[in-house]
Length: 563
Image 1 (cartoon, one colour):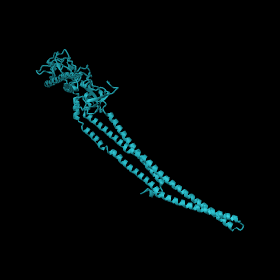
Image 2 (cartoon, one colour; image 1 turned 180 degrees about the vertical axis):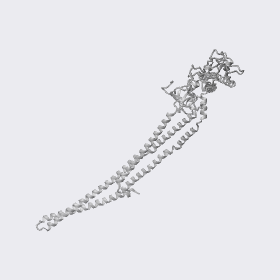
Image 3 (cartoon, helix red, strand yellow; image 1 turned 30 degrees about the horizontal axis):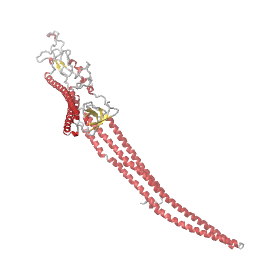
Image 4 (tube, helix red, strand yellow; image 1 turned 90 degrees about the horizontal axis):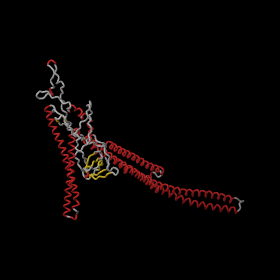
C-alpha cells in the first residue's frame, strides 16, 4: 500500500509516526548500550577474579601438584572466556550500537528534509487558495455595487422630477460598476482555474511523492532494525565455538587431576632420607642389688635386650644419643631453620641429593654452551687466518681465552658438586646397609649415633657434621603439628619485579627449579643473572624458576635496576 494515495490527507499523523519510529530505534540502541555495558562489566569482574586467585608467588612444590596445575588451567580458561565476553561487547558496540546511532542521525536529517518539502507544498497551495478567495470576494463586492448603481439609475430614470444630468450621471456610474464587476468576474475565474490546477498537482503529484519518500524511509528503518537484531544475536553466536573450547579445557583440566601422582610428589618433596630411629635399650638399674630366690622377684632382663648368646645387654651410656632422640626427632617438632649453604648441607640427604644433581645438570649445560662457543670462535679464527680481509684473527683471542677460563671454572664447579653428590650417595648407601642389618638383628649396634644416622664407638666425642646440627633439648610435643615439618621449606616473601624479558628460544625446563618457556613468551624478571648464566623469572600465571640468560632478551626497569 502506498502512503501517497491512501493517506493523502494524513500529513500530521505521518509526521508523528515517523518521529515515533526514530524514537523507537534510539530506544533499542539504548538497550544495546546497556547490554554491552553488562558484558564489559562481567568480563572485567571475571578478569579481576582470575587475577585475585592466580598465584602471587609460587612455592617450589605447589605448581607441581596436578590439582594446582588443573586449577591454574581452569583460571586460564576462565580468563580466555572473559576475553570472549569482551569480544561480544566490542561486536555489539561497533556493529549494533554504533551503527544504530549513525543511522538515527541520518533518519532525522532525511525526515526533516521530506517534511520541509511537504510543508512548502502545502504553503504554496494555501497561497493559491488565498488568491482565489480574494478574487472571489472582490467579484462579489463589485457585483453588489453594480446592483446598487442599477437600482439608483432605474429610480432616477422613472422619476419625472429628476434632472437629465442626474440621470446621465447615474447611468454612467451604473455602466462603470458593471464593467468593474465583469473584470472581477474574469479575474476570479482565472484564479479559480489556477487554484484547481495547483490543488490537483498537490494531491496527485507533490504529496504522493513526499509521502512515498517518507514511506521508503520508514521501511528502511524497519529493515535496519531487523538487521541489527540479527547482528545482536550473531555477536553472541560467533564466540560460542571458542567458549565451548574454554569449557572443554576446564573439563580436561578436571580429568588431569591425579591423586596418586600428587601423593608421590608429596613423598618426593619431603622425603628426608633419614632412617627411622632404632629401639631404645633397656637400662637395668637393679644389677648392683643382691637378690635371692626367695625374694620372689625377677632378676632377668627383658628378652629383647639380651644378646644372642643369652647374656644381658650391656648398660647403656646415659649420654647415648638415643636417650635424647625425642629432642632431635624434628619430624614431630619444629626444626630450627638453618641458613642456606653452597653444598646444600642444610637440607635433608634426599633433598640435598636432588638439588646437587640439579646443579650439576645446569653446570653441564653451561659447559656445553661454552664449548660450543669455543668451537665457533676457533672456526671463525681459522676463517680469518685463511682470509685476512674478513677480520683480524688476533681480535678473537681474548674471547677464546675468556671462554676457556669459563670452561675451567665450570669444570671445577662440576667436580666440586660431584664430590658432594658422591658423599651423599655413599652415606645413603651405607644407611641402607645398616638398615638391612638392623632389620636382621632387631636393634641398632651399641654405640653413639650421629644426627644423620652414622655410628661411632668413640664415646668421648660427638660426630658433628654441617649437615644437621642437633637442636637444644626440648620436651616432646604431646600433640605434634604435622605441618611444622613444612617450616623448613617455606619460601621467602615474593621477589619484586625488576624487569621483563622475551624468550628468543623455547626451553623445556626439565630440571627442578627451571622454568618452561615457549618462544616469544614474555616473562617477568625477579632476580638478575649472578654470573652463573641463569636468570630468575616469573610467568604471568605466577610460576617462578630459572631460565638461561642467553635464551632471553632482557629489558630492565629504570627504577628497579639492581634491586
